[in-house]
Image (cartoon, rainbow, N blue to C red; front, side, top):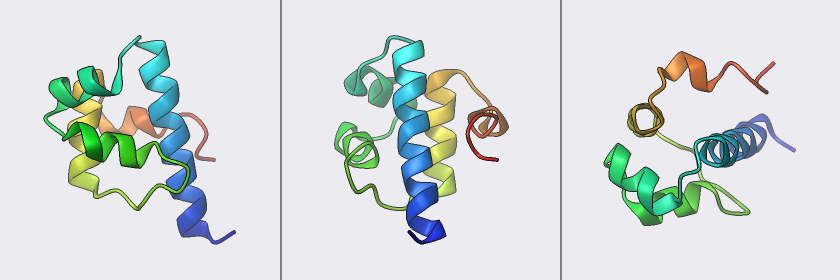
Length: 76
């Protein structure tokens, strides 16, 4: 598995984890972050695409996190 695919899967898993912890649906996260619901759905899919850093920053704001907090777990 290439490192690009691996990081995409780690980001996907972290998004799912945070949504579960904060009890948010994809729709609610989209509303809070200003990122289209379909894009969040795509980022959490079986084969997620690479995410732009500015998009990830918006999603983090939707979670009430700073970007650096997103990468605290599972990115060692």
